Amino acid sequence: MKNDPMIRSISRLAVGLLIVGSAVAAAFAGPSVAAGFVGGGLAMMASFWFGGVAANRLGQMADAGLNSKASVLVVMKLPVLGLILWTLFKNFEPLAVVAGGSIVIVSIVLATFLEPVRARKEA
Image (cartoon, rainbow, N blue to C red; front, side):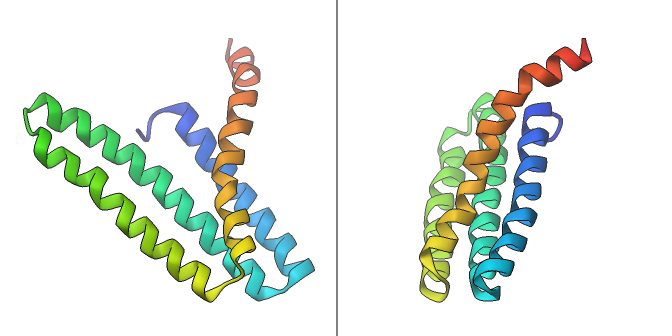
């Protein structure tokens, strides 16, 4: 998963958008909103990365014939993510948390649009 150029591109874009978004949120709305933005962004980035790791492990475990143990990784992710988001919504402005979490989707869309440009550059 780490070697895939698209995953690295999405991760770099998400981190960059998180930094820019938190600076803008801190400048215009205050540090509490910026903290909610960063919390939401980190939660969704961790979910994205863990989802990639879980998918990789699922493939490896399925090849080894351990299908029942592989499903535990996927089942474990959702309650943990739910608790993280519930805590963030409880302690921070919900709109800031949602906006921070949206950076992963935005970075996926941007990476998809920038992929042909990168492919031409490499050729």
